[in-house]
Length: 257
Length: 233
Image (cartoon, rainbow over all chains, first blue to last red; front, side, top):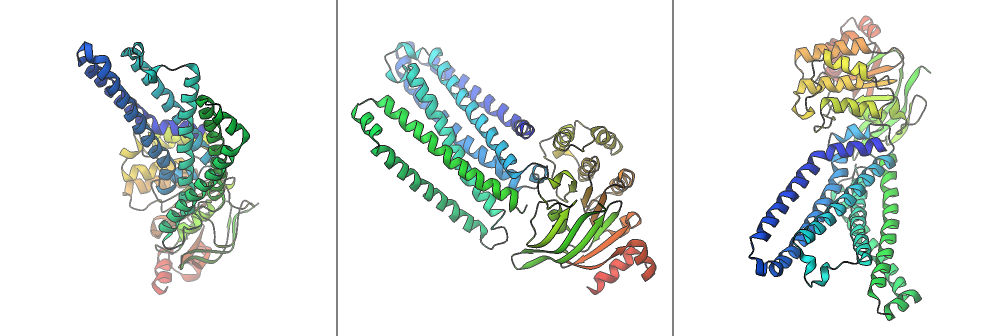
């Protein structure tokens, strides 16, 4: 599996290099603009610009990451070059697993890069000296922030797995059926509706638990957020495992490339 | 085990189209077999089922005594007709990929063949000409010590030099412990190297046998037999 992951990295090396270069160019431009603002108002305007900037970068990174991990699988399943991978003596589970591990590593790397970007900007623009609560991050808050970002990565991965399952259905069970694209799309929608209903049930159960009632009555938001993140991570993980097994089975036993 | 590939009542359908019907074949080691037929006759479908890239709709198939799976891909070296080598790779990386993925890949052999094929290791796959790509594909497949080699239309759309190099490579590198299945409709190009032939039409085997026997029985070259068979099919 390590060999497969290694080749995924080699495949993406140019994309990584270009992405990092673009972010760094954007960063240099942001710094230039920031120090172009007159000193007395720099901190006030700067913090607003900075807040918008990190939000845009976050959303852009999440969207690009999602597109990237979907194409990670799609290109091999639908393009001629995918034969090179699917002809190797690796099982469908292994090929899928390698792609997921690669996507996870990529996601964690993006989160780390993003956090570095945020803290570098905070230090460089000296925004932590002003009275701006948002940027006063304690170690407890930092853990929550990292958990939240990881949950974001997991949710994107789990969503990508839903897309992967739809692709696998398209190329296997429905490969010889008319309107396979439409049928697969409806199945994709159905899986998502089913998933959201299950999540709703889990959420109800959690909210009615004695522990949740205790936490919500204690007015201790950090603990509440922490608990919600933990359940979110667990539920996403279980869903991802089910989707992984289904997609792996189709790749291994039913595929028609 | 002499029978490396066995097909029993093999069927494959795509919606209403029958790609393979009741195919019964045995491919034995030490033979170069020509899978002949016009476009859409089922040659590629059969090869993809052997390579475990397609699943049959009915019937049985065994590869070295096993059902096709990711494990049997260890014995099967399949060259699809498509450009299947990643365009982002350099030739050297494609060789590395094969060396890492296949235990039977002989890197030294591949490097020698690439030199014979006049392909630069540093070149990007996407920048190779059609002929160079075809030569690279054959090199990667032939450099394995597989039991079953399958080349799907290896000479299609190539210049005479590329054809000649590929034919030379196939003859020189063929291992008598394996079987080589070559699909083509350019019969005259490979007639001399085929031990056996299978004629497919609309997914059915319409004629098969040893090349020499067919030539003697019918008093014709293989190309003439091909024209006769498909002229009436």
